[in-house]
Image 1 (tube, rainbow, N blue to C red):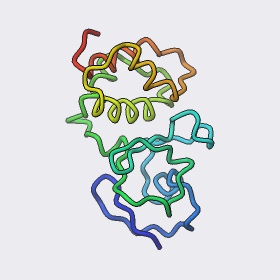
Image 2: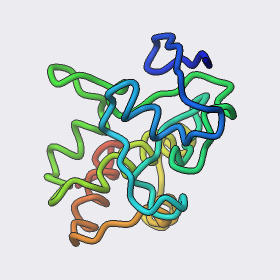
Image 3: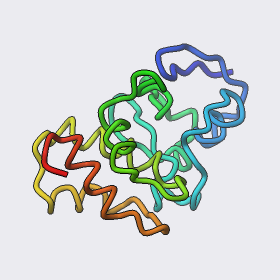
Image 4: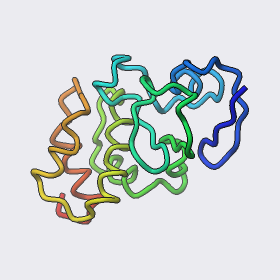
Length: 151
């Protein structure tokens, strides 16, 4: 048994130490925001925050989690979405929605470090997140909107 804190709540998890955090989140804690995309930490669909920093949960063993975890479910609620979630909704920055978790989680961490980013900085920050639907322009507008820039 391991203890981890997710979205402000402490949990005892029964998974073996080498189990990817993603599996614990989805299978034990029923948090389905983080998605299994590639399993190689290359697409970003599984991104969560560990200690406030973005991490690929598909490649992070649960035994390596030594700080609080935040998933997209922990950012806001349906009634009061996080400003980045609100911007993504406002720009309709999802088509299939599979990449949206990673895009939002990466954006939240990025804007915390770079509150007034340039277009080049936004593109560089999201470079490690893959979207196959073609909503890139809407995603970029959503990040600009969340940063307080023109959409």
